[in-house]
Image (cartoon, rainbow, N blue to C red):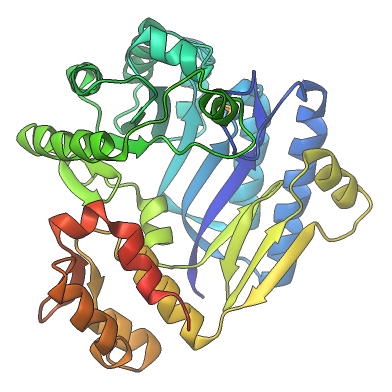
Length: 379
Ligand code: SF4
């Protein structure tokens, strides 16, 4: 029996942030109960079809899982335990937005076995939070963080976004300092991606807001790398830093191109050589499950070439790179034979480092990751 990770998508939010292109919706509170029941049913159907899988990580993401009554999250975690063999020491994560949880909610999550909390801080400058359309203040982020510690969370991540319109390097340094003052176990730092169709993209194309400068973004990233190394964080993935043994096990399974089962509207799965994804709209998802029909919107068999390509593109995001032995064990071909040409060119450009054990990005390659990844796309 193979080990899998489980992702449960909660697509509900209190309001839609200006930059957000995720599959999330405000104003669907009436659907919480029915959606939870549909998720429970989808998990049961999956276990009937694939058998009772061994599960090492469970991740409730969104959206904002914590806008849903904690009793509904309890039902989901119970179903997950019923349908799968969840390891006793499994990492069980929930994403939470500041201001959506109180002490009782956090205590209830702990009692359910949730042992990792990922808080969407995004910035510690109230003006930037307002610009992003976030509903919370920096003080609420700090309050949520301290409440989580009090509730017994020993593994807390803070998400931050940099390269915001009008953000200066000094403002970013202040954000990092404010985050580090809380001493989180894990930090995820994402460069703002201006997604087409979002209010933020419209504000930028109309000239109301300045377009973020990629050179300044690189400077912010490099500065954060230094500051977090000085503070003792291990930089283990392009956008992720952790204290010792606090790497996100769930996300590591994605970067290692390991199997995962996704449940809910728009959720993706990768299992037994196949990738598939569900319909995006929560209403349609619930209706299909209610009628006993499949909620899968598309699927793709992963052939060897695609599997190798995905393993490289995901694995190169890890600072340890892609392990040559593991690659060969999995695909029965040496990595340097499959990608000899690409490796030669990228090493010459100073973007990749190839040693006896692994292939990984150089510091320069970390700034130009996308240029490296596209060289590994299937031909
Ligand atoms: S809270 Fe997260 S998922 Fe919800 S709208 Fe904001 S960015 Fe999107």
